[in-house]
Length: 110
Length: 118
Image 1: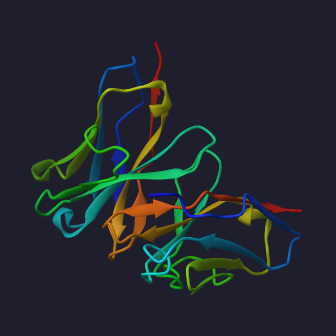
Image 2 (image 1 turned 90 degrees about the horizontal axis):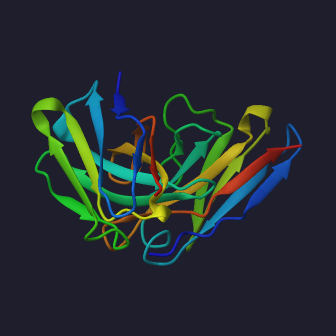
Image 3 (image 1 turned 180 degrees about the vertical axis):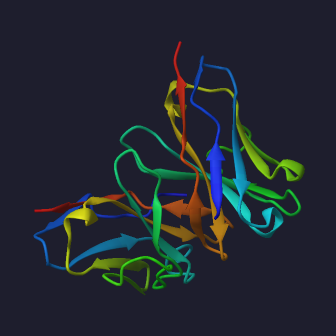
């Protein structure tokens, strides 16, 4: 199972909106509404930010939103803040009853 | 509150095996799956496999099939991940994480660093 494809890095100034893409295939991202997103600060465990494409867990800021079109899912961070600087990973359920993560995106707040 | 507490760091020689534990609390143990995810230094997250805590059924990534075994002890609410035939490329932080709903990982352990070195 190949990793989902994400841009290596995305950046923006405070207050701006950025979008991270996550491209897979019809056997994973495109086949199920089971895409989730994780934020990881250096040396820390990942934190769930979005599940089932667009659902935000309790306690996650509404500045984070998710969507999907075909084989590509997206995470949008609006009103970028310094604490959003981290690595972000997408994940998808697959037709093999397994899971796959994305290649990861480093978000930098300029 | 939900907690997943993992065992401490390990140093192993190539060819050896390692067994990492994940003690859970704060929820009904048998109602959720547990997954294992690893992250080599500076690399992406990599899904290894999962276990149904209720009945012990497992599913592994093809990459680790034959080398990884995930087990559980329901009396201790503890899960285990054993990786055999270790090589230097297996040096990584290993995480246990709870399967929330049907498709995502909602709570994570603190991670266990496994270093493989001669």
